[in-house]
Length: 124
Image 1 (spheres, helix red, strand yellow):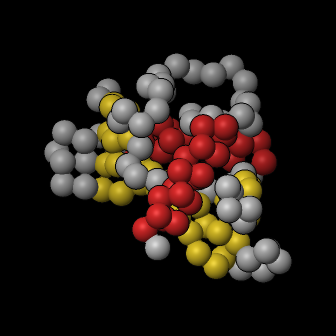
Image 2 (cartoon, one colour):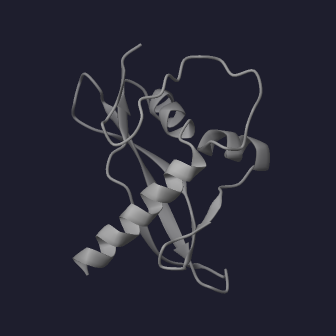
């Protein structure tokens, strides 16, 4: 299996089986709660997170993964914007990349959210 996690976080082995599902990782949270985790961003706005996988032109690693954070209206009645990370991982298959994103720890995802908010604020 060919996997490579980019240098934007700790390298994580994804092919080791887990004996129990924990909700401290993104994939574990989805499995346990059947919904995405919610966060309050550094801008004090409510966000959820979505795993995104895209096909690219690199034949060695034709799939890349990143996170999109929809920003919800303060009333919770709709999405009013979003921020996203840069590419976080790449691999040979869609499921492989989703699995790499799924092992990300929720505390690390909160850091990624705040970085994305700050980057977007600096661009505006």
